[in-house]
Image (cartoon, rainbow, N blue to C red; front, side, top):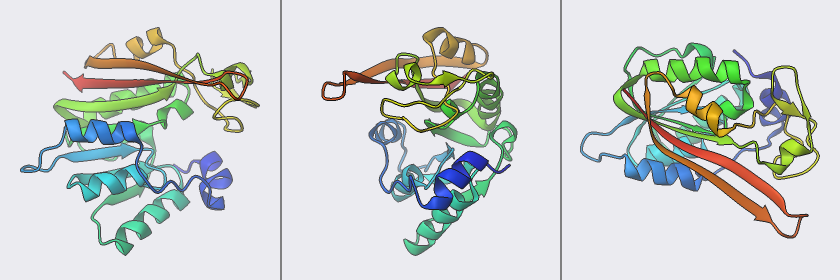
Length: 220
């Protein structure tokens, strides 16, 4: 499945080609690494592969999936140029092309938050299927406290677009999660290990608030 918004408006134009990993992914990886028996990890919505790049360099067996052809090609070329091992595919998150219980870990750094809530539930169920028992999933999404949401318009599917302010102004089709929605998302088949809500207020931009959730769950 090709992601037309991110392909045509972002990655195909050479935008958002992040080079280095996000700090919360680094923390999650180091808390869950095993240098003796390398863990297999799925990077959902891997984009330009900045997180996958870090994970591969740290010895993880890396798989990445994204809806953008340009993003996946960028990942593959970067890994080849740096002699790193990784498996990258263009695919549909709602139908992950992996067998049951294949992964030790899964990460989502603000990818599922680009889907509506109904699709998120389907994807979370797929992640659960592909994780081993006791496998962990790091879920990072935007919060309903985010200033960008308040400056936008809600679509029929519950996502928000036409955002004029805040740290993700200009990005389309974003779902902003409430606490109870996250609890419902992981109600079946999961144990929530950590649920952190982060607010960063920019005092130089009309007190603009960047709000997000960092969630760690374990497959039962």
